[in-house]
Image 1 (spheres, rainbow, N blue to C red):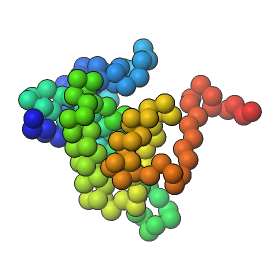
Image 2: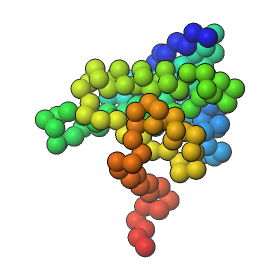
Image 3: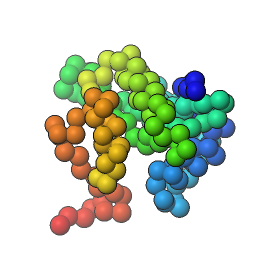
Image 4: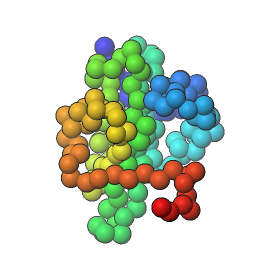
Length: 151
């Protein structure tokens, strides 16, 4: 297996749609060619695809966020890391994360953050093996359907 990491192109919409549906069982997932092009045109964002033998087998999105704290040094957020079920454990996820790290290093990022569903224990172990720390900070999420709500 020889994984090749590249930037997603609009023609990848269908395969990304399929991969994302493996990540979340949500009928609202809708990947469009137009949105992939918008992301490709954004210098602060990378939507990466990992191909094996010419077939897309994984993807990750990395976004740089402006930060006032460290002299304009951005931080990064990784989202939607997915490896095709048939290929998990083959090094694709690691290759995608390492490429995301190279992008972040090239932009002088102070840190990379990511969230992972609380029940994805295997994913947590994977992230920790790659040097991410789950014991240093705690993540919180509020979804759009809850905006404006307080308890």
